[in-house]
Image (tube, rainbow over all chains, first blue to last red; front, top):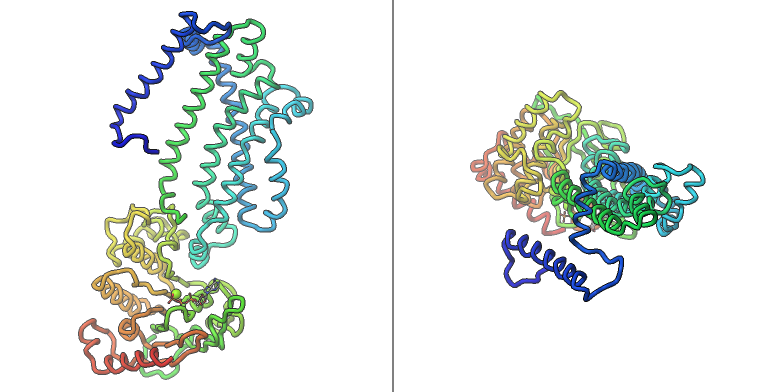
Length: 263
Length: 257
Ligand SMILES: Nc1ncnc2c1ncn2[C@@H]1O[C@H](COP(=O)(O)OP(=O)(O)OP(=O)(O)O)[C@@H](O)[C@H]1O
Ligand SMILES: [Mg+2]
């Protein structure tokens, strides 16, 4: 995207970005404090920030953040293993692809969160139904990316491996899956963001007060603590940004070689 | 591979009326040829006449529509033991997720790490890629990638070495060096070599015999025995009147078919 005729230096970009954000927040604050906009329940930036700072120093809340991260990681981990396995097999074996194509298409379009209440009925409330809901919603980008990555393996690379004595199982594990890994990882990256949103949503809908979602639920109903609701929401958002940045960094370092893929 | 006087040559590879069609397209009509053990055989022929297809069939990657290929008397059903192949698509044949040294060491993955490191280093030095060990294939020029692919084939110390236009992307001097490297390795290891090339001079310089193919649908136009003495030399061999004669002959074969 080119907005400017000449690209700005990195420092200038940061300064401008921060200044712009602060400016908008300051104006928002001014509008509310001056009474120009008066509707109860609207967030006042400084109060939300203060509340967020307080929450981050509060061990009870921090434990809830860790609970959310735990549920998210569990769901994402299950999705990654199952997605890479099933996607890899579907990409490598046409028979498996044909067998699973329609089930995948059908399940993919279901709103996974709707399965949540059923899971609670079956398993009882707790971490398990939330993690499964997360896995159900985040498996698809991983599965599909792995499938197309494996299917797109360079035939010359496969032929080369065959002349070097690699057997069919080795071809799948050492060549096709490895060459699909950058694509699978892109799927995991996408799934990570979706998964975090679903984790917090599931906590709100089928949780029993645990996690960031549980905090938001309690703050909004019992106490009417709207600053707390806004602050926790922002913290969840920032967590998402941090997770995405971490995955982007991992992508650049671990899959540096993917520049060499003939795509 | 000792006596030059022996008239009986051990035949390693035997192609019997091999034909290959892709759907309705008859790529290779009927090829009958013998690749003697421990010799250098070179296939020349116009573009699209099925040279790469033949190498795929010989290496067990693909199967003939008709006819048969036997390796040491047994029909080829899969990739034969001790085979190494340098693909025409050398850049796609290097694994992009492995650095050069791991790519070259890949055929040696079952031997000890020490021995592997030494063999890889030998191969890297031989093709002139010293100092490039830690590059990824895509960080190298086409010619360097091609040399890495050749090094990988050499590092495995194959019994049968197939090379599909292995020197197409290197400069003239490197090409001459790599031709001599191949002849050196052939002389020391006694490996059976089958090279595909477009270059008639190169075919005669390398070969014990040249298999000239016709335009598609291809048949063998003629198998030319190259009776030039070894070791060969880039300057004196190419000035040998016999070399000039053979070159004229192969050139005329490729023209008239
Ligand atoms: N996988 C394939 N599917 C269909 N046709 C093919 C396939 N591979 C090769 N052919 C056809 O077979 C013929 C021979 O191809 P091949 O690549 O063996 O030629 P070649 O002699 O190696 O040519 P070049 O010198 O240009 O490399 C061509 O007509 C080509 O179109
Ligand atoms: Mg070819």
